Image 1 (cartoon, one colour):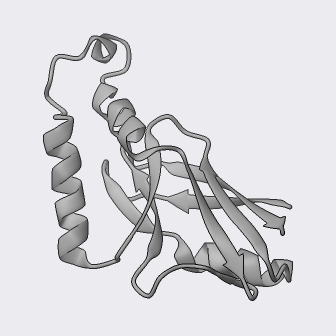
Image 2 (image 1 turned 90 degrees about the vertical axis):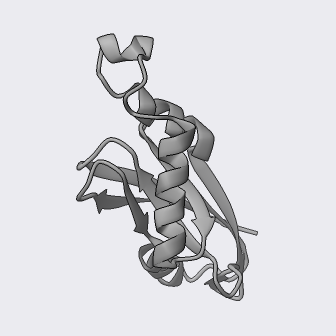
Length: 133
């Protein structure tokens, strides 16, 4: 069972917690055991799991900027001027898998699901698959 989730970013780089929205889809599905798959359909957005703590999110954003600086002379910038966004998305990846246990996301105590907007602000679409196990 596949669902679409629309997410709107507010900044060029925006780390958006989508856990509640995904959990809502899981609860509506009534599937008790299985797997939840998240997939971003965009080449300048990524997904990751981590804690929703403001200082950590600031560190993640700084890490992305240090790993792939925006002002570097990338060849792709001659086409779109967003090569850094594409390269950062490669670092994060485009999909996540989370166990579905007892009708709930099988996340650890502090784990949350994030969409990383890397070329915003934009409206993004996530595919959320709920696979009965």
